[in-house]
Image (cartoon, rainbow over all chains, first blue to last red; front, top):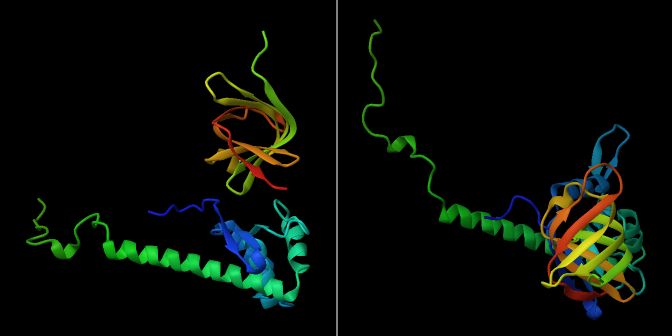
Length: 146
Length: 99
């Protein structure tokens, strides 16, 4: 059974021109929440809405650990602010390439988890106790208490 | 009598996966006769959750990359703030070249 906790294992994703990015395999609940917080803007009435422009940057920053572009800008171990600044410094085309790669990675991880869940359901563990329909005969008797 | 030779450094860290679990300022790593290693240093900052996870790796950066050892036992000591750290390490891991 898959652990309920996220293990910090990285995954390397190849990009064009022989470049690559190193990303988190999965986000923890805390990292996902931070990602949502960064993606949201607060309206005048106080409600939060997902800002599609911030969402893409936030997704990249949530997953990105390192890249092969360190000769120009080193991001390994950098803060969210510094990684955001580095990602924002990319050309639009390269930004989109990285965004697409990370979105595809996230989809693949979600699909993997769903497939694993389906497998668990179909193979099925033994029920802990028999269901009520399995019970036959009289369940209880009533007697007058004296 | 001289003890085992030590690798001494200033900046070191303890990683759990890609997370930094602890920051070390001043350390000495010594190889024992049985091939294992010991780490003695000062831990100046750590994440209370991450430092208790496994596997932990001690990382000693140098000018061309990093020396790394798996941590087998770790004693953080007591108290608050920077404190002495003692650890036993497994065989040295392949060197990571970062530059």
